[in-house]
Amino acid sequence: MIPKNITAGTPESWESIAKAHEFSRKSINELRKAVAILKDQSVNSQIELGELLNDMIESLETSGKLKFTLNFDKEVENSSQDMKNCMYNSVREGPSPIANKRDHAYFIERTITIAR
Image (cartoon, rainbow, N blue to C red; front, side, top):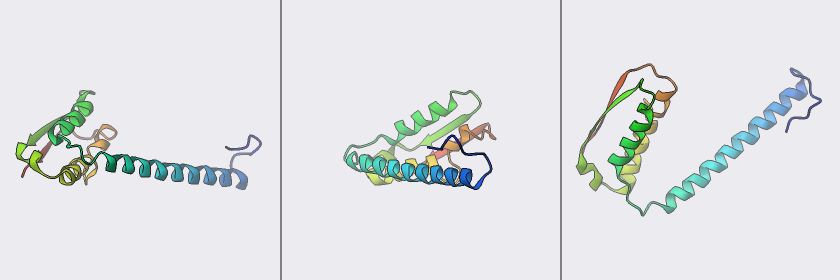
């Protein structure tokens, strides 16, 4: 918590901001660890990759500005759980992350192809 008696632009204010930033960074790292543990616990349950990708696309298309085309080979569903998780994460956070498209809508349409 930043004390109320600190003036903006002073060394004390910068120190308080640095402490708050460090606290936030540590909190995010701890949250990521917790999510990873929860993910590991659910590894035994099979995910339907096609369904997850369609859900992601549907949620992003709700604005009406973005259009996705998913070319999905159903044979991919026979892949291992780890492989399907990797594919999902690659689409979501790869070199052209889908998640960022809702924030930086610089395209109208994107095609995603998942094939075996």
